Length: 92
Image (tube, rainbow, N blue to C red):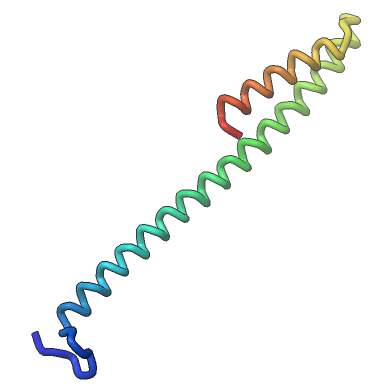
């Protein structure tokens, strides 16, 4: 291949190789960032879903305690333990 004008000691092939290596490095960094972004989005979606689940459980607790006269605080403790275990198992 011909040498590019103004490249100093490097010829065009060396420059192309360096640019290719840098391009590959940047693409890997972009992929890593993309994966992290997806994980962040998924984690936020999981948290939203867990919050919705907690709300549904709380509504169910109120209905159950109204029907059965079971102390709602006891039921809420069970739900809180369940939600905590769920979050811990999902690392959120």
